[in-house]
Image 1 (cartoon, helix red, strand yellow):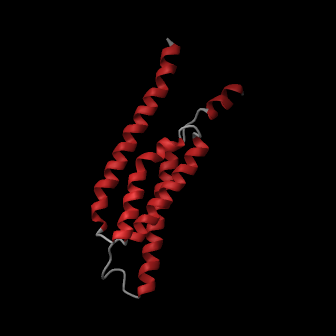
Image 2 (image 1 turned 45 degrees about the vertical axis):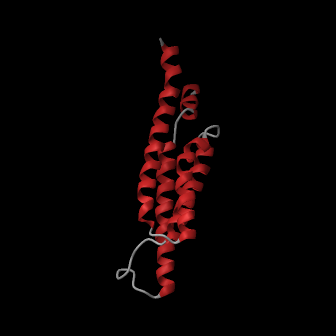
Length: 136
């Protein structure tokens, strides 16, 4: 029974945290888009495009939930998981203020995801090294 509790304390729920945060971010974008188009009375299918406010709200929801879930999962390095997405949050906020076409945020999203994946792989490789060294 002692081994089971030790194994559970070492489990990493980072993937689940990212998935839950992504689902909430996409749902937030969809809800804000729906509210925006419901308020204007324009049919969604005739002039649909992402509004800057919905992108900012989705990015904010994603970053906040990811941070909160990572604080539960790994309190010490929770900010390290969120840090790659802060440029997206700042630039989507700037896009909200400037009211520019949000299509330029797509390369920012892709670079944030690439940075995050690289950081997670490095962290996992660094975390697994002491276990391999002590097992030899």
